[in-house]
Structures are given as C-alpha cells and as structure tokens.
Amino acid sequence: GENVEQHPSTLSVQEGDSAVIKCTYSDSASNYFPWYKQELGKGPQLIIDIRSNVGEKKDQRIAVTLNKTAKHFSLHITETQPEDSAVYFCAASSKEGGSQGNLIFGKGTKLSVKP
Amino acid sequence: DTGVSQNPRHKITKRGQNVTFRCDPISEHNRLYWYRQTLGQGPEFLTYFQNEAQLEKSRLLSDRFSAERPKGSFSTLEIQRTEQGDSAMYLCASSRRGEQETQYFGPGTRLLVL
Image (cartoon, rainbow over all chains, first blue to last red):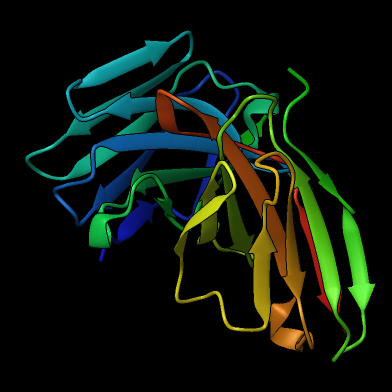
C-alpha cells in the first residue's frame, strides 16, 4: 500500500530564513498531495496542496514542488516567522484497493522558528 | 462556513467503558472522514462516509468501533469496551462534492483511557 516518508523530523531555523521539508511516496497512482500545519492541541490545518498534473504551486511565502518521476514532493517556507512554528504533515491520496480519497500521512516535521 | 466541529474536545474514561464522539462537518460537505492520531504520528485513516453511506473502513477499525452518519449530516464514532491502546486524538474531516480529496479537519477529540 501507499507509504509516505517525511524528513526531517525536527527543523530549527532563525527567523527570516527558509525552511524545506521533504516527502517521498510509494504509490505512483497517487495524484493529490496536501500539506497540513498542526499547532499544539489543534486539528491539522490545510495550508497548500498540489495535484500530479502540476509541478509547482506557490501561495505567498509557501510553495510546494512535485517530482512525479522520483515520487517526491517538498514544502518550502520563505521568510519564516515565529508563528510558523508548528508540526507540518505531508500526505498523499491513497488509491489502494480502489480507495477514493483517504489520505496517507507522513510522521510530521516539528518546525521551530527562533526570533 | 463555521468549519468542522467535534464534541467533546476531551474525554477521560475507564477501561471497559463505552464512549461516543460527535462530528459536525462543514455545511453541504458530502464526505466525512474519521482519523486517529497518536502522539508523534500523523493521522491514520479509519473510515469515511459519502452522504449517509459508509464506503470504506480501515483495518484499524476493529469490531469495537462503529461509526454512523444517519442523515448524511453529523456523524458519531462509538468505541465499545475501551482499552488503554485506544487513547489517541480522534479527528474528523470533511470534503465537498467536486473536491473530494481536499479535506478540512476539525479540532479533534482527545481520548484518555485509564
């Protein structure tokens, strides 16, 4: 079945620097890749997503790139701010057994932005 | 659009007791998903509904777990004879017709089984 690996597990950056989180997936049939931000005690918040017919998507300080051939995708946050500190999860849509829409998540990256 | 809501936010119970959680999806979202999240892990899929039909169940959903969405709006997740291993955050998400894979999560219900 689909497996999503996420790296690094923790990331510490200075305010203003960029942060990059990388994920790989195993199922070439997956075609939807969202990123979620989760703050302590809260549910995951969708911050950006990308579909397999697009190689890159950007929304202000956040961008996601997708390499279908290599089966990996990355989240880029520029000009980081302390409020970006949270746990970030990547996910991939599962197509196993004809599944339609459930997501397989990575284990998360704890991002700390130091002022 | 008030977002996905879940109740209760926290539940402490003793081993062997039954618990029930409720999820109210975003208005007019036809799909509703349940996930479980343990400490330091990403959410794991449990089950999902399209309208009132339960279309998929994960192997994680043992026979002690049952979910319903009787009128295609809110959903309940019941765990019978709780075990300490059931302690986790239970997350609900919903998505709308035409963008089925774009899932919006609620705040979760944190369960502690003593």
